[in-house]
Each structure stands twice: as structure tokens, then as C-alpha cells.
Length: 132
Image 1 (tube, rainbow, N blue to C red):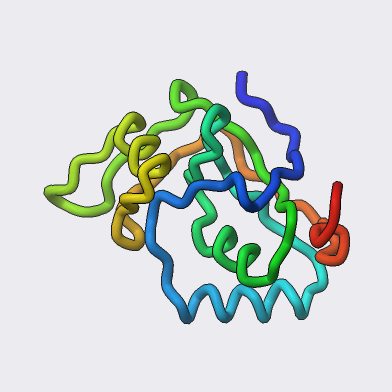
Image 2 (image 1 turned 90 degrees about the vertical axis):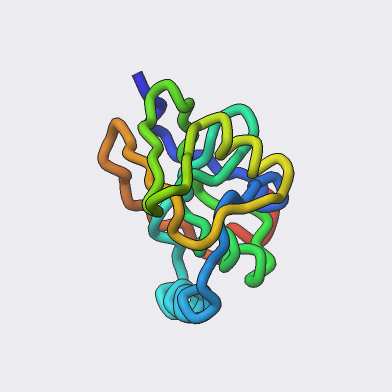
């Protein structure tokens, strides 16, 4: 059964696996600052903190110099992953290897299907700038 509790994870431990769109990151930073809260957790692989879903949010957190972000942890035995790009093979092992090596996929290459509906949250941005 998947863990459904959101935890605060250090931003510097998150490992990107896909590129991101600059315009989307800029828009997202503005939206987060306007709201004053972080509303959507980042989904990560439990053992290595490889980002499964939330690459734009991860980059926004880095640029905002946040120390921690809300995350949900999953194992690949409970998450389905597949390619969004014809001819680009994707597997859980490859996603993890790319996250660990820094050899990331192009933007919007992978799709993860989670065993639960992802919950919303409302962590004040100021609280994410320091120690949880």
C-alpha cells in the first residue's frame, strides 16, 4: 500500500530526470509567490529521491532558494511509468539511472501513473525557506 503522507524533503536531495520549460518555471514561481503557499507535492522515488512528477516545481523551488518542499514518496513497484515519445524506451531502472547520472530526458518524455489521487497541500512559503 502506498504511503499517502506528505513529508518535507530537502530540495538539494531531489534528482531531476526531465528537462523543464523556462516559461512554465517563471509562471510557476509567480503563482507560488502570489499564493504564498505551496499547493502540490512533488512525487519522488523513495530510495533515491528521483523526481517522478514535479520537475517544474522542483526547478521553481531551487530558484526560489527553498530549503524544503512537500513530497510524496513512491516505489516503482507501485507506480507505472511509460514514454510519451514514440521510439524512446522508458523503464523504472532507466529513470532512476538518469536521475542519478544527470543525463536527463527531454521535457515531457515520461508519464507516471500513481496508485492514489495526489492530495493538495498548503505549506506557507516562508516555512519552506528554513528548517522544517
